[in-house]
Length: 80
Image (tube, rainbow, N blue to C red; front, side):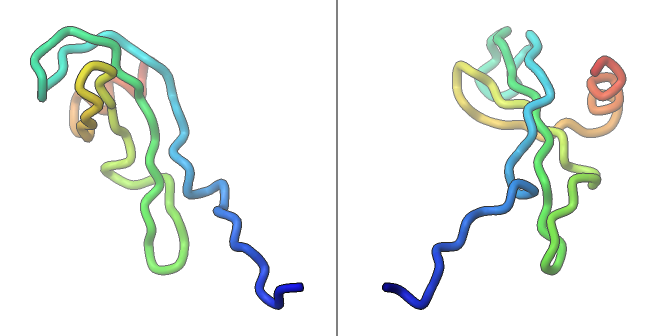
């Protein structure tokens, strides 16, 4: 019997999927489906969901993510 218990990850560290949309990928240049998700950021010992770079879009073709900021971020959050 072990003295140490296995550490389970908290659910506050897992990115939350917000939806999917067709958009042009900045990396590969194709018009593909992107997964929109909210990424928590670690601040000191806690994970914070509300920060300036928490909204990201991942291309299903090239699997690269881009951070949505500014006008693009507000438009995306307004449509959800």
